Image 1 (cartoon, rainbow, N blue to C red):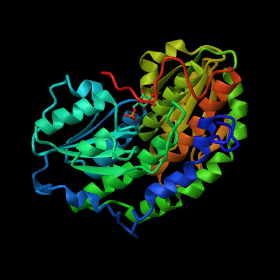
Image 2 (cartoon, rainbow, N blue to C red):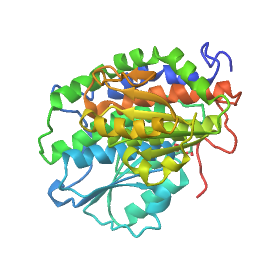
Image 3 (cartoon, protein in one colour):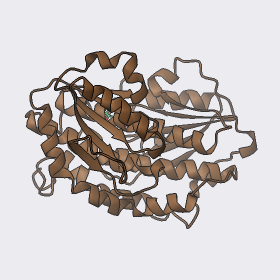
Image 4 (cartoon, helix red, strand yellow):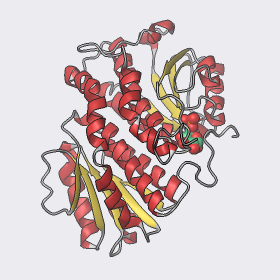
Length: 365
Ligand code: G6P
């Protein structure tokens, strides 16, 4: 096993560091100058004019990726109703599905029981089915009308890292590809495609923050709780960051939309409470910063992840994301939050690769 870990202490650490490479592999051949290349979509017999709704359906980390994808889809196709749904809820929620519906399933393993059951239900109702899957020839891949593969390679650690970021990049491509089919214009498409292409090097830069995150993770040494906040797209990133932290370090971590903090969660903030705040969306950053200050006024210890030009004079612990299109900051942010969770779990002496009570793939409903 030591050899398989390639010099790293754990599979999770190795998989975190593989991300520049697997993101590059996932994007290989997919990027044009101002468009994406997704020949798989042409295999589906979709009459694009007839489509009335799009669902993104998944579990766990893949569900967090789906929320991000749905938000991008809504940003670029505001007139088309779209929803991100947990597969375990989709089946019981009486969501309307017919032949004018596209259901997009996201899964690392392609074997999650709830996601598979949701796929079967969608097929019974004649929906078009597209899957974003990591494992070749998995059940989800075999049963979907169209399958797009993330090229993350085998993910051994139970907590998903490289599968998640490859899902994010491929979902950006998929959403762009879908929108291209409706011939909608996408603002700043060239910049988005260029920044996707730069993503492996951006992640290389982000990995250099490892020792800073190790230092910040010390804050959790004797803590049982942590709060993650973010607005708009940053909310999905903090949802995944909090999931990662609780999965492997057993710290009770909750993620909140920054604006919702004052409607309840702020009651839990006391001197020394750790708050991880993400403010990468310039247009709403001022609001989030003001929410963060509300936690600081109650004694919270804040770690702020933000964009290059944000004024951070009031903050002691800051990490800046390299300059990148705001719709793509979720990808580098994910890597930072993975390293934070990883170091917190190591500091607490947890078995990072095999957290208690969790399975890599949940094949029961
Ligand atoms: C399990 C794993 C999670 C994963 C989820 C969905 O709960 O522990 O890491 O996100 O299943 O798995 P999938 O293979 O469908 O992405």
